[in-house]
Amino acid sequence: DGTTVVTANSGTGPLSLSVLRNIQTGDPDIFQIPDGAKTNSEVLSSVFMGIAISPDNQTIYAAGGQANRIYVFDLETRESKGFIDCAAVVEGTDYTHGYLGDLTLNSSGTRLYVVDQINFIMLEIDLLEEKVLHRVPTGRYPFGICISPDESRVYVANVGLFEYSRLASLD
Image 1 (spheres, helix red, strand yellow):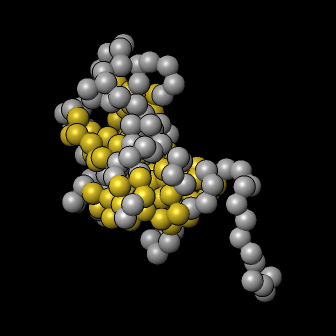
Image 2 (cartoon, rainbow, N blue to C red):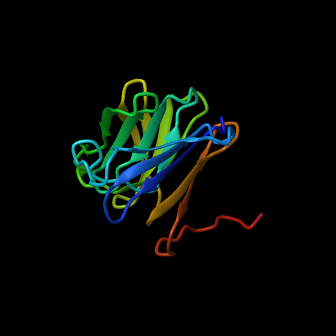
């Protein structure tokens, strides 16, 4: 709703999220998850660029980079609500190793779409069931993701030009 800003602090430690709440008041509430100067791998073992805040402003979803997880945090208590494990073997394809990056949340807060930069796929996650519904091939190095305003399509931007598709027509 425009009152909260969250950043992912990745790279060197501590791996964390910085949260600024009530930014319009002139006296914002600023904190870090997990709190402290050292990485708490029990709470957040890695973090990358994807972050979303639920429509009710109660939950943060954070892409876990090489941990292949979506971390979930309660904005009120600042506590971990666990994670959604995206590792799996599906119909003989091994997705146990992944690198989750950018993500986007639908307006009702029930579906999360995230790019996996190792497996060149987009994951659709049901947040009510906390499970991956679909893994959709995206081409090489998916990097950015967004959902259309009417939520009928999800768009993925790829980095690099290593996979080409034939154009059937220029019309």
